Image 1 (tube, rainbow, N blue to C red):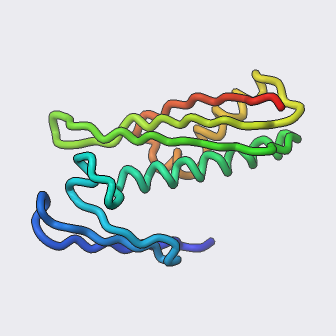
Image 2 (image 1 turned 120 degrees about the horizontal axis):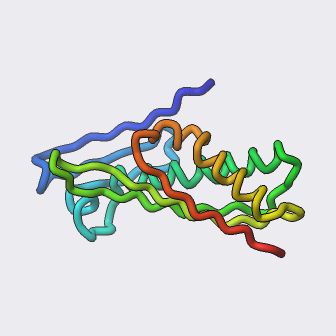
Amino acid sequence: MPVRTAEAEWKGDLQSGQGQLKLGTGAFEGQYSFKTRMGDDTSGTNPEELIAAAHAACFSMALSAGLARAGFTPTSVKTNARVHFNATGQGYAIGPIELETTAVVPGIDEARFQELANDAKQNCPVSKALAATEIRLQAKLVKQ
């Protein structure tokens, strides 16, 4: 199986420094900073945003795969992920992560859809990697 890579470099102190990161494939390269992580600066990214992107993508793929194994072909699965970054007594922590997915799946009933969505939440590789973090799911089945 492939090994995925990324690199990041930070220059300067925490509050006024700047970082640059790059995905190994070259598909994304961008900056990050204290302000993009702790404030409302949107001129760069931050680790939590990257985790959200990875989790939304992985969950959508896992749900699609689970639906296919169960005999359903989804028309679409769209997932938004919100990764919270909070101050704690011991510093900062990620959590909870909220996944909100909307899917168009012909021929499936609501109960079976919810069952498969919850299975994907538990078993997508990114969810497993983030198992120490509370993951909440809202799954909506849209009828065509």
